[in-house]
Image 1 (tube, rainbow, N blue to C red):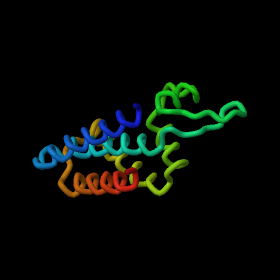
Image 2: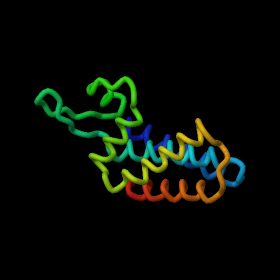
Image 3: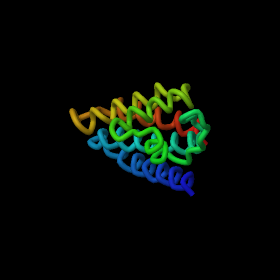
Image 4: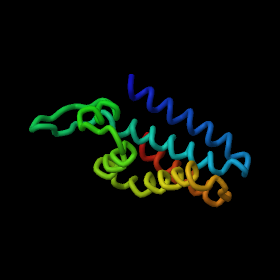
Length: 132
């Protein structure tokens, strides 16, 4: 069930991203929705995952349970970046670029040009292609 939720969420965010991409003035939201779509495609790829905890192997079904087991209360985006680096290192740079672009778009600068929103769309496409 969790995998269906992740993939549905990824697809939903991607639809929003493509819709917003029709208007150049929403480049910041194109970047942000591309990032969150990529995040959910990666969650779908990574989970379930087996982890070692206290000398035992545990099958973890989703990121929320992973955070509970690992006692992660803050810095969940960083924790997920680390997990992507560990499980899907070939996608880590693409994901982290999207994460950084999204952070800047949400908190520092909302005015982006088409070039950066197109880059975000390309990063999303790369991640999506490797996660299906």
